[in-house]
Length: 69
Image 1: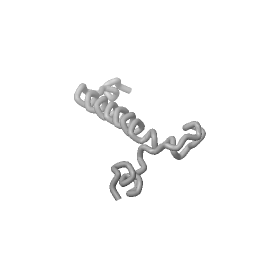
Image 2: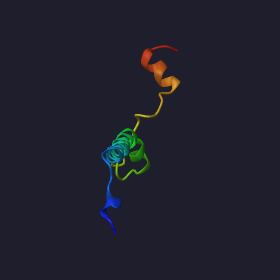
Image 3: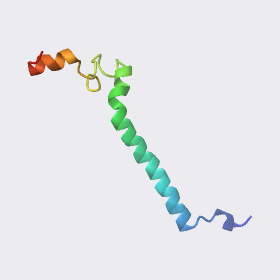
Image 4: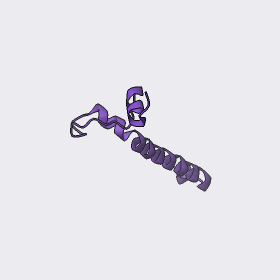
């Protein structure tokens, strides 16, 4: 068996490294953006607190805050 079959040229290695880093960084960004939603599904990780960041304000709350009817 020859060691020539184990050779990876620099271009293929660089592309492979870029793909690996892209998936890792993309995964971390996705986890960071979705962390609050993830915690809302598992209450014991959130300390029993309910997250209100992703809930839209109702019309009555908006009118009460602005003083409009």
